[in-house]
Length: 365
Image (cartoon, rainbow, N blue to C red; front, side, top):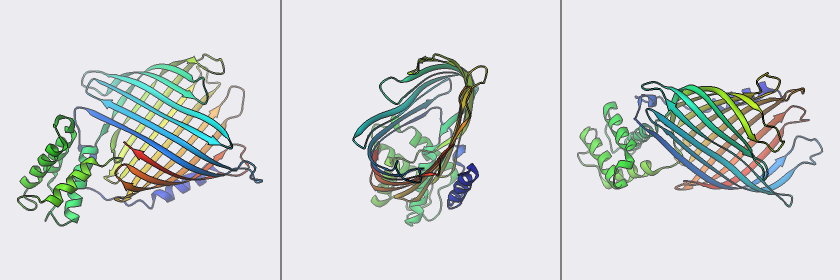
């Protein structure tokens, strides 16, 4: 299948997303420190209709998969850690796979220019591939989730007719600043009380919010899976493979670009492009990942991902890969969800696209 078809599907899918403009832009929010931590665990059942016409590669599989993300950013220092891994049982055989990285960013005083150090690891068996890299970059990703939660509180209280008019932008920003300082509050209840006081002081509803309004505020503050990021970064540098199952220890060049835009409190776009190459550019690899997350209803979320990659080995022909996944996630209760994923894969020399249907249940912490 040609790449143009995947791009057409991606555009068509995103056309169903309704973007509601907010009175205040999420990217207007800023706080001294960005701190995001998410983790998840999923068990899934997978049916695969492979790329071969005789279907000899069709499989049924059970998989246990997990992920972890930690992102921290301050005025002069930042770091990130992420890891994904899976344990799968397919046709009587067990397989283990995963990848992860740790990076450190040191910013120039008063600027978004940074020096970068990174360690990458990838494994598809017992022995991993490990590389270290040094470089420089510019830009930041900022966590604007507190303002998104403030806007959600405003929308919910308006929908329930608790408020008679929207909360003013200045008050929304003040609420977001308090939510951003959640770790400084001794209890969640103390933060809920502060948010309620700010709303009452705006004089957009009753002089004293009732128990139902307080409950809605608390539910929104404790909701998971609605992280919103805004900003961009670009970086480049040089790295070296410390460990490689193939026995190669090579000097490599790398470059990366990342962009995040929350179109609304319900919609997040996140794009990342990474590339590596040997110094003489006789072999290289580049991959791009675009993710669109849209909350359709309070309990239903659409997650669409388009992945494109090209790997050009030394002395060989480039191999192109395209993948499009669409996942509907149905929340059962706080943190728990059932996910239904339809995926399409295409690769150089495939006889036909590969189709996947995955049903999974998982928890987000």
